[in-house]
Image (cartoon, rainbow, N blue to C red; front, side, top):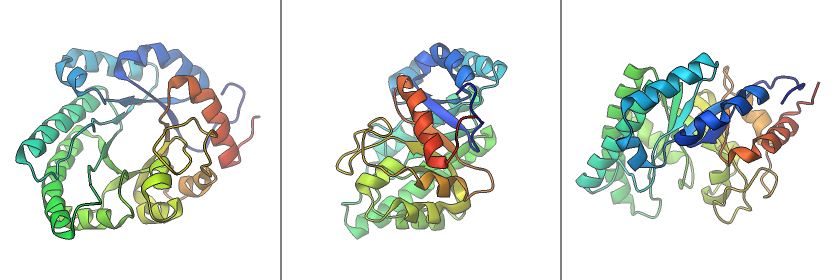
Length: 265
């Protein structure tokens, strides 16, 4: 915020691509970046390349470096259904192409993992997921975009150990603190420790540990003091992405500052 000491990490405000231009001036004034959520796959697939290229050029001219949240509704590249795997891969690939054209630094995706599936089905899911993810990772690397996996419904980090083993390399991650409050069996600190230096982004929203309600920061009972630990783990601090309507960004910055122990100048 104006007149405040700069934070030790980047903060980004999440917004749909249709409204990025409306938020640019606010982001510049507050010193925050832009995270573009591609949750409308119809808009993503129907929008010409020139739109994404122009958006990227405008952001670049203003010194804004977008991050992207890839489509996720109903997508699952590890699905038992070949049709679902194929369509999911096609839509996610389109999202990566848009991220590249917008000159995004990173793109976050959900795994689609369903923890209630029996063990034999989980093994099959891992194999399918690893195949599709390796293809996406190859494309992301060609585009210069860091592809990050986000924890969603996973009860603990072990599924990511299995994915890494199947893919054959360490991967990048986005920690969703709100998801750990609702779906994880263990504390968020366990996830921070597991992701370690591979942690590149953190999604922020609040809840009461009952449902993924995406409340404004401070309106649930999440302890955001964890941010002080999480930001200090990697050599390059993760980007903090506020997954709320842009009208909450000013208050969110206040909560983030308090959690990190940063005070106004």
